[in-house]
Length: 66
Image 1 (spheres, rainbow, N blue to C red):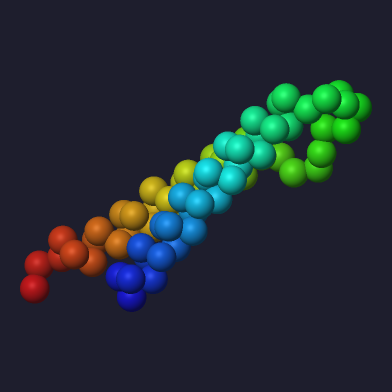
Image 2 (tube, one colour):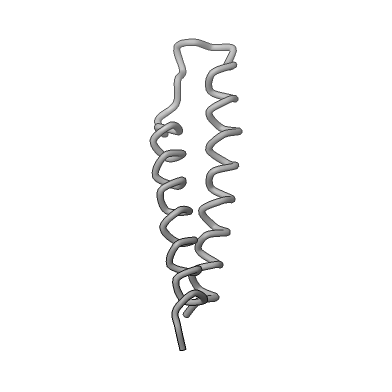
């Protein structure tokens, strides 16, 4: 179960990187009238929350007393 949380944390980290790159491209676009339809800052914040939560859950399994 712990490996699943680490895997999900990795997916969230990859999504954070994608959101940063995509938002940078959106801010530097040539045609100002075509902003796009994905709210990249929201995706970034939600992915960051998911990364923190998954990391806490993954670490929670290793720090539990046996």
